[in-house]
Image (cartoon, rainbow over all chains, first blue to last red):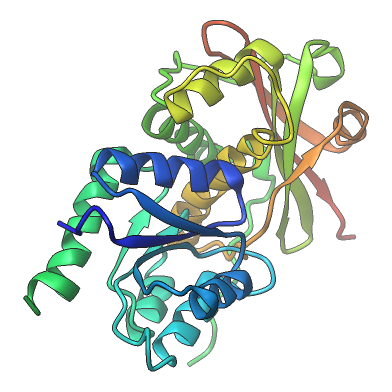
Length: 134
Length: 169
């Protein structure tokens, strides 16, 4: 599992969903968070953060810059091209999932979700990106 | 290859399969995300105009061919605080700016679940975004054909409604 000091960037235009995600992550032992309300602000947060973000959890449907656009921007950035990226979405249509996979998402969580299902996905992302490299 | 024809119900609110997708999604969102069990519910004669305990609500616009509609969810104060407290696992006693977008998030999840199932069935709903509404705006919402559902969450009442207006000839 991710180290407790891993900096997690939580991106969602809804304050409530950011709170839910952060609360769930805290129950997994994670302690450090950055928040952003859309992809554009999230990209700024990534670029301005002195500490490297170790896990990104982002909503899909957001104003200004969607989660998919944000994912593409992250993958195009040299520093973050391999960053663990988990997408949250209320929709799971095949075409959308394909788009996200093609753009380099590591996994996705379908809303509504339980804390246990989010934990499973975070662990799967860890194994894929961090565990396999360790 | 030619695009498949857009699936449009003759009358959205008379199509049980269509309505059922929204209702199953309402149940899933309340039960999975908030841990709130809903009793079996069915359309009632609950009129939003008479939902006097309205405290907070959200509306999400829909379009399907020549049908234009929306879904809405509205809560009494006690119902919202109970649902929100369960969402976050901590007690909230006042509805303020910090917690009000929970109504939008719940409606967003309800639409997302229904949209996925309906689009698998051949409909072509686009992504849409919910917005918060005041009680005055909610009362304006009540034009067109509606189906209203009243949900008992224990400490208060939640209203969920679907509305459609035909704009074709």
